[in-house]
Length: 227
Image (tube, rainbow, N blue to C red; front, side, top):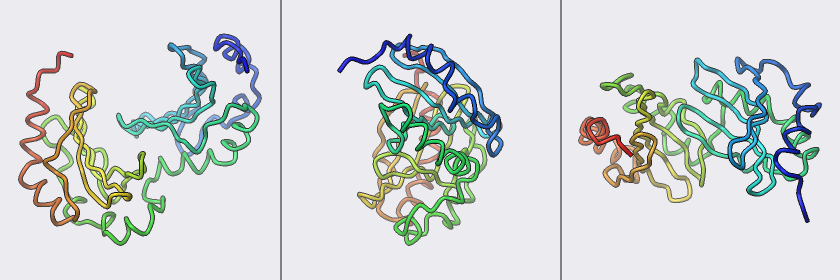
């Protein structure tokens, strides 16, 4: 089966009633139509909340010929596998029904039910995690446990320290499939692995944060950023 070129898709979606008729604002996120082509990605439309450093993108990819929704919170970005369709009309139907709820979950992460494992683990109410410093050096505490967010592969993000200017980041995840806490680093937007925070309990994670958080952020800050 052959598919139209991405340039043809870009022309067609200019008259896509689904996009045209979407609300101009949803829960503080403002609609911006785009139409730019970046390689194999067509950026159709996005809802942006600058204060939250968050956006929801509606894209088309010529890689797989799919319409897709992309979540961005801070510098955390992922494609939402619940809304991946080759058929434009089906994509519009499914996303149209879900869009207010998706954006509400981004505006108010605490409203999202992250499941029994997260509740039973005590993550949302974790006193230590919720009282971490709002800033450490150039890093801003962008996410803390009481406002944990969904991510990918069964993981949620429970702690996120980010230096937005340099695209540096320290993130702690809880993976529900492995029942494990772990961390990842970004230096100038490039992932670096870290085993220093691997834990199976909040108590264990707290001990590792107390021992290693300050040094880890200092390491990120001092590492060569020339890629």
